[in-house]
Length: 431
Image (cartoon, rainbow, N blue to C red; front, top):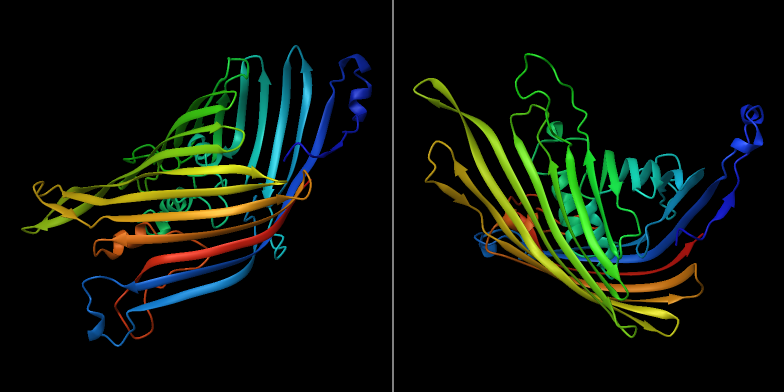
């Protein structure tokens, strides 16, 4: 979609006139974007958590929340961008890419903050070196091998779960790092393999944490915000497959509490012309080590609690061209193994939460009015199961545009989500 753009040729600077025409390199700048607006509806059903008899409380056994919105980016993210490239000769090229999120439903966000991508790069026969803010390698697998491209009500379950992990992550707001490295990483250095390797492709990325190092201070600097990952694959004809790994460091600013988010996923697709099959396998490990202090006989003893939560699952999906449009459908599932916590003062003691599971079905149709404009409709249904744990249920809760109820006035018993439904109907135009 980004190839459909109007080129604006850069004016030659006054200084370049003194250098001479033979030294001018051909350069261009392209303005591009997507406007995507939908009428979207979300409905959530929440029930009282297990272990709390609803008949003993002045509260209904279940409640529901719903909203109908004019939403943005339900088929393709709404965005506005500027990119350019300069031919340096000898096969070398310099380029830049600035891309901003748009919210055309209310006009509140537009060009000015390049939150989606802001990079400068140098490319040639050796590949490409890219600096700045960009997508992390593991997120490409989630997007490329998802019929719904990780957007809208049909998006696979890993997007809201992973985003929730990196924004809350079980810490107080004061200790959160200002990064969300699940989708994109700031302050990154990336390298991409060249495109002449017989179908093999790949990338590696390292994101600097940029935290202050101070002499005489233990745990300095904090590694919170550092991210490292890579993705390697093979694409030839109708076959495309790739595997990716990422390790996101979410240590708090003090450096005492350590947290590692380790992501491993793989995807494959095969296009039979009449139908394209897609599949994913994913795993997220959330490994935490928290410093605590116990007072034993009036003497403080520092110790660590270790806990490891794990998400595993995958997706199967299809796309099928029908007339001028495309049918899309998918089934995704995530199993959540809640943290097994080890108390360092008594290693034989395991504190175990209950596990949970979430499943999602989605189907939709895209009707292409032209190469740039399309109408679309998607409907999705999500069901959640857990073994009596409020924490486990909330750990797998997808966003869906509606906040889940965690209680009602005058009642201390929490509600946890059990199912959601939603639809998107909209129009997308790319330029």
